[in-house]
Image (cartoon, rainbow, N blue to C red; front, side):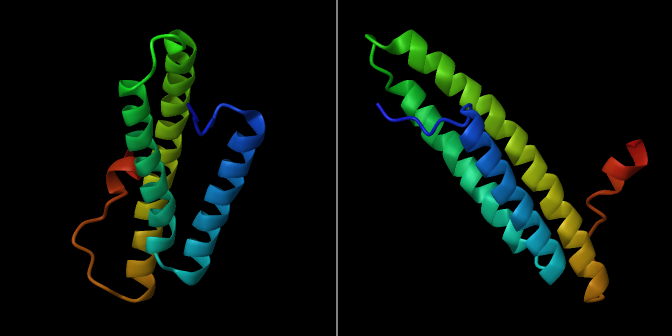
Length: 113
């Protein structure tokens, strides 16, 4: 069974670099759909991990379950980072293009900080 191992340090650093580059690119071109690509990819990974977790063979069950659960935890951190960056870049885009924003999506976050 193949698992896209996010707990591997090389893969983790590579995914972090790609995510940061997508966030930076979205900030520079002021398009919130760029970090949404990373968000969609990480959400797809969670679905794939859930499917793999459901169909783990019993012979290798414990090792794969622990690996998949670790990868899901790391993936949720990436989902949080890319979602917050999506909201941030959406606010930057709304201010730059002088669009009326429905709500200030990050006010709840910045008021607590």
